View 1: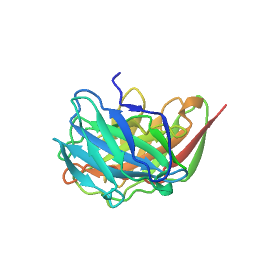
View 2 (view 1 turned 90 degrees about the vertical axis):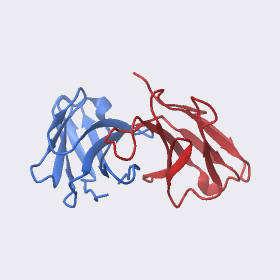
View 3 (view 1 turned 180 degrees about the vertical axis):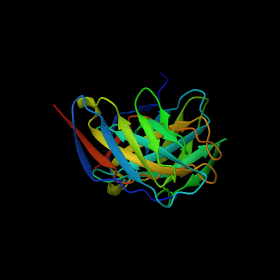
Length: 116
Length: 111
């Protein structure tokens, strides 16, 4: 069964450094998402992306964050200057349809980001 | 999106059916009910979704009341590997596609 894959599984970065989290969505999916989960807290929506544009973003997704689909298969989340509070699990998800569709989102197993 | 209410935790004996309730009394006509689960910090796993009819797939059944104000996820023969946090999420089909996760129900399957 096709799945969303994320790399690396664990990323350790010094505060203030840039980090790029990578995701390969399911191949026929058109909508892509990033969520995060701080340890012990709820899963939180960050951003959705369709047709090479951000379609929705949360208050968490400030100017330090950016997303990109650099080629036909990868979807990346960049944090420009990491802060201690960025430490979390970051989950990528994809779906066939988005707004106007009831198709479910499928998640990867996440990247654990640890900021030192 | 409508708010959902789920019990904090539930226990279930291995091999028995696990029935997980969800209240979504403010659900509107264009909102679907989705169920996901999360096994120990893995990514949320999609289980099933529905609008108003009962649904069944290889993982579970979803029973939605006629007034759509509540639903029950049924795992027919729970195993130890079904121990997880189960999330009931209501999402509008139109106008936004993010999933809003609550705290969910911690299901413990015991031998």
